[in-house]
Image (cartoon, rainbow, N blue to C red; front, side, top):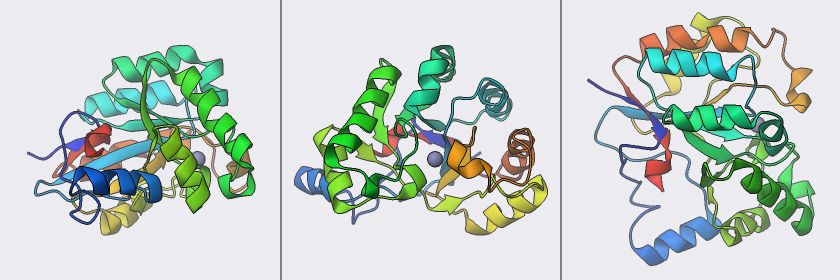
Length: 232
Ligand SMILES: [Zn+2]
């Protein structure tokens, strides 16, 4: 039986190109980011961005528990400050907690001081649960911003399969589209909350981005679903 990773408990093999000797690991942490992993097992990593949200995150946790799936939650510091109990709840459910900036600004447009502020403030709020993983807002980054994350000891995690769950109201259509893009070792991007910048692009209610998880997880019963910490 396969599993679904949240990047946490069951180590996945890294791609040879991004994980060889310790020295290259340091170089990768400085210059690159993890987009997917190399694995011999039918495993994928689920990630949820932009939370936590008091209405949605607990329901996502319920669905993950039902399907025995693990995930990584890349949280915004601003939202985590308002709901520290949800950060703890995610951790206690066995999932990984990652850093998704303070308020979801585009990192390449910020000064170095602003970038440090965004990451450091969020790390403080997520303590003691942070796994030192960072996902840039919108996936936008530059050499300078990746270097900043390296300086703060944060591993940058991207994705290889986007669920487009903020714009696809039909859970079965989203599931079908994702099935075409997901392979063993894929890192899947989903959301458990929408940041303010994305709300105007969302034609459906926030509720719909929760209820569309079950068909997807059911369809992935041939995969092992895990979290993201193991690939570091
Ligand atoms: Zn985001």
